[in-house]
Image (cartoon, rainbow, N blue to C red; front, side, top):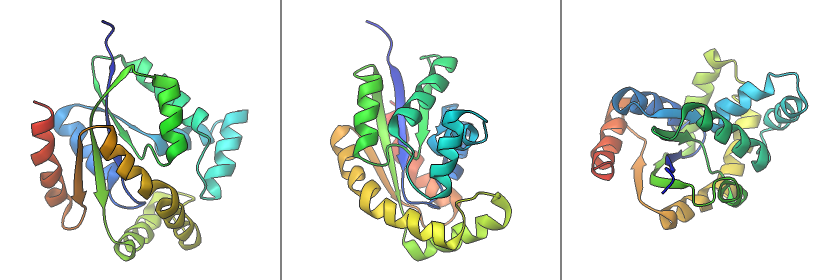
Amino acid sequence: MAEKYKVIFIVGPPGVGKNTQCDKLVEKYKFVHFGAGDLLRAESKKDTEDGKLVNSIISQGKIVPVKITCGLIKKAMDEVGKDKIFLIDGYPRNQENIDGWNEVFGDNYKLITSIILGCDEEALEKRLLERAKSSGRSDDKTDVIKKRFKVYVEQSQPIEAKLKEMGPFIEVQATGTIDEVFGKITAELDEKLK
């Protein structure tokens, strides 16, 4: 039987700490981390047709077409190989993402677990505006943040219920310190990795 891609999805609203927790998970478990957003931002800086399209969509706070995102993720995974566990951050964000993922990967992946992070909007907006002081990200502006929350509530929140149906999941409120949140995640993750 052919080896499958081993995947952990990590999702949650903008500013919930997906990237921060991913860094800690990579350090502890040696996962290979791909942020859908990071791959798209890297692509948006390229002077290619896809790059220009991605840049235009991101700067409006909208979601990039699934075919581009899945293509970038699969290409990055293929460069590493199937012997690693892939931590995929900020994906899937809507039903189209799930459909696109299934189209690209079919049953050629094993979902180890989904990590679903939550936090209230007011706390998240403060975090994002604080991050904006040093991030240089075009989407860390108040008007774009509000649009991102609206997109999250309308499109991404319903997907969290779908992820729970797709396989094992860990749900954590991302309040408290970074280490407290990490402790909550790893307590459950250690069980899923056995």
